Image (cartoon, rainbow over all chains, first blue to last red; front, top):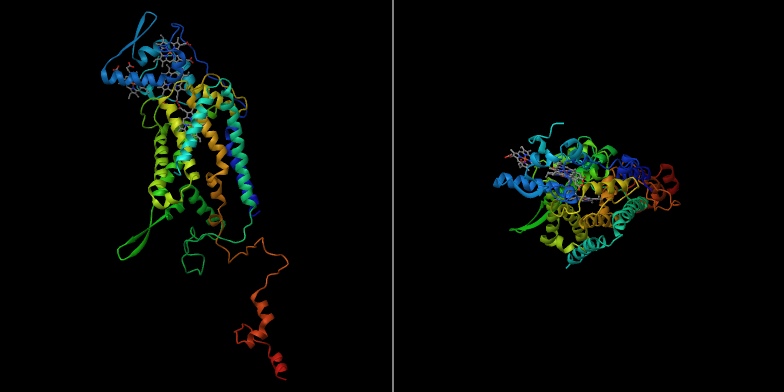
Length: 124
Length: 344
Ligand code: HEM
């Protein structure tokens, strides 16, 4: 084998690099995020499973609708309360803590929504 | 045609996963068993191929030299095109691997009026290849957020830079567009350019379609078919896989299994295909050898060890008399005394 030393070293480096997630986590999978659910209500604006997967699409839709047509009404009633299409006036009324709710999942999934550059999060 | 079979194969794989993953109990197979098997095949196959290549004999020094080689010291030499030491070779390899430098030498021959034949550098291939490979790399590195807990700062920074346009939610990534664009251009090149179309084989099209399939399923999953795509559940599975405690904590959309299955197919297929150029580029003798065959003796392993090297002076010593007799010029004349004896 010509340059066997160099090739084997390179190969070992390659394998270490490819298996990097194994060394990085070293067997510790970390905790699955536990979010604090609202106490004031029992249901979300959509079924919880749908919210978990697609809440950002709903927010995006709301944003576009409100800003383009000015239509803030949202035809889902939760209990006897009516809600409007709004980030602060709807979501954050029930989910009163951004840190204990939104951020829990987001830091786990490494997403940093830029919404809070402008929108004001509830005071905590 | 040469691309219908690979296309049908990739579509077949997608449907296989879409349907298969919906059979109760099969989620564990698609989410855990197949990924582990694929990673083992990838790493094992990769090492096997590299060691197999490393073992092959190297009879000659064959670096391609495309510039002035080392010569008299007043002749300007080209250190990158005809490297003579390890440092210069390393520079050449680095630029090759990082910037795909030799693709600038992709030439297009044309006959102009005259008739005059010209060879012009055609940098399109280089551009398409750079676009594709770097988009792929960034997508791959961004995916580390699913496998690492806590997510390192660098991965977050890459996501931020890639999503800098802030279009929609979830934000659109630049590399999603450039990856698909790169693939489309590389495919288009094989279809549009007559010469390249002629030499393209099904196994040139298959990896393109497979990677396009991965990109399309990924993009559909992120932006369009979000039903059942709970990223927390997926991350728990992904982190579980790399910590050897995989769990599937919920019903995941079929499109996720299709995406993952195609990735597994890519990993398993990789070592046995042309994609091994990833490892091969490091081992290509025309790039990684120094152009020093006149400075260092390179021994051909095929040489019969019983045949000893025979230098020219030794050769002349052996045949001097005959050479002089035949009028062949020699470097050393016959000794004077020997001459006298011959006459006497
Ligand atoms: C060859 C490797 C892979 C390639 C080229 C690839 C490509 C892509 C692309 C282009 C997207 C669109 C969104 C984005 O760019 O982030 C995507 C999304 C996604 N991929 Fe992959 N992928 C690969 C491997 C994997 C693996 C091994 C997993 C397994 C956990 C995975 C899970 C996902 C998920 C969950 C999404 C949706 C992300 C989101 O909604 O933000 N991918 N993939």
